[in-house]
Length: 240
Image 1 (spheres, rainbow, N blue to C red):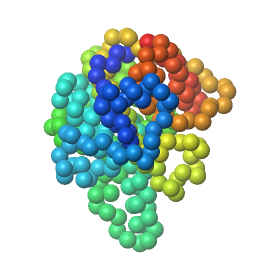
Image 2: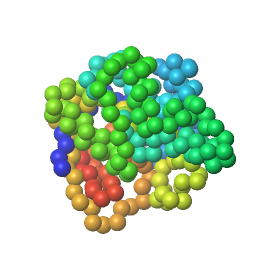
Image 3: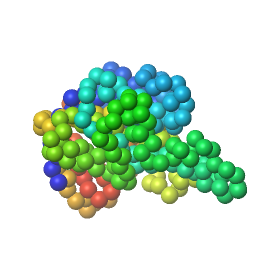
Image 4: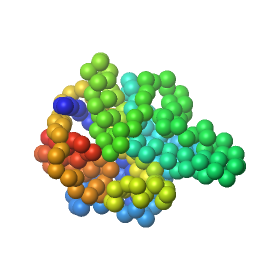
């Protein structure tokens, strides 16, 4: 599979990292995130909406709003490997204890809650979709974006995010699966300054220390002419 995109604009947040200067300094060194560092504040979300969203979703919607206001995208794609896992566990715990689940948790537990919140707050009836594809959620979001761009859309907003993973689920995930809220937002156009070729991966994957979108950001911002992201069954080879 081949992908070709141009990144017109971007924003990202993770513990201890927010502005472009933070990310450029981070990309020049080891790809590590200090999980106990504070999260940056949201700058565009109304307070009442922010209170209803989980931490990673807040970052995703906040960055989405920022890019929506700077540009006029034709479509929006949100990707998340785990989505609202914290909320879903709270709902299951409540039901197991024969207690009613929180109405907010119930309403905001679906996978497209974040992208729906973005279009509602922005009052923008955009074409939107929400994807989950395991370890390859971000890369599959880029595949979806490529399809939009090839169908005539000129600007596609892709936002990848995740929340904390509840302790109950961690034993069932790979040993170094990242566990912190983050969001990466990219404004994509059809021109081809970045190319990607997927290949079947036969060798065992090395331990993952970053989600795919943050690994992509590290490779791209570092100025490398080529870098590789690993997925569940594929390797994604990027060239700039």
